[in-house]
Amino acid sequence: MMMTALRRRIARFLCWIAHWIDVMPAEAPRVWVSNALFDLTRQLTDQVEQLDASGEFKRHTVYAALIKAFPDARKKDLSLAIEQVLQE
Image 1 (tube, one colour):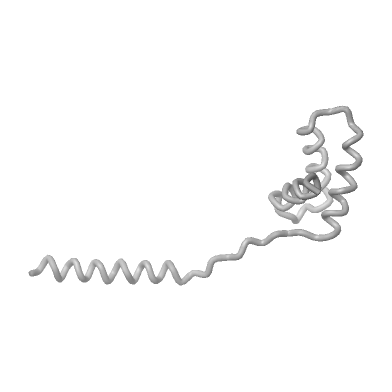
Image 2: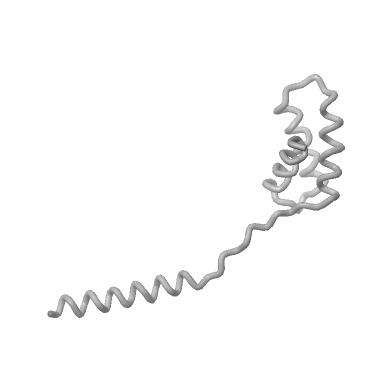
């Protein structure tokens, strides 16, 4: 009998903790895209196409230039911009 009451208290406590944790709102993923970013990415990819180098070197060259041009942007968004421009 005593074990059942203890289990109920533990279950209530765990439910309270689960509710407390679940209340925090999930952040929507922010995507930092702008026309300026895509325009510069297109311009840079057109420039590096002329180079006689590997695709990885070309990508890194564009990526480094974008980091310098948009230092506050997330690196993930810059990579996404490169991929989207290449798939156009």
